[in-house]
Length: 87
Image 1: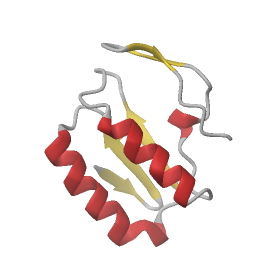
Image 2: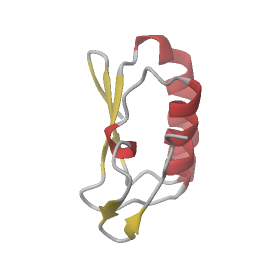
Image 3: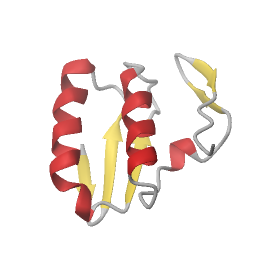
């Protein structure tokens, strides 16, 4: 995880153990986060990342998560996926 001011950048290659640590860090610092970007250039290691992002978006709708903005995305190593979190 990298942090640039109010933006958090997550490497989608994190395994489940790293995602658990990330979830704890995010919850401790959530007040200062305005946007969460995901670098999925090399694919996604764990589907738990989607669950974490979806949970954050539902709990903190003011945090912008560009990965969840599009109704369908294509990620190397996974293919197309849809997380319709608007409803």
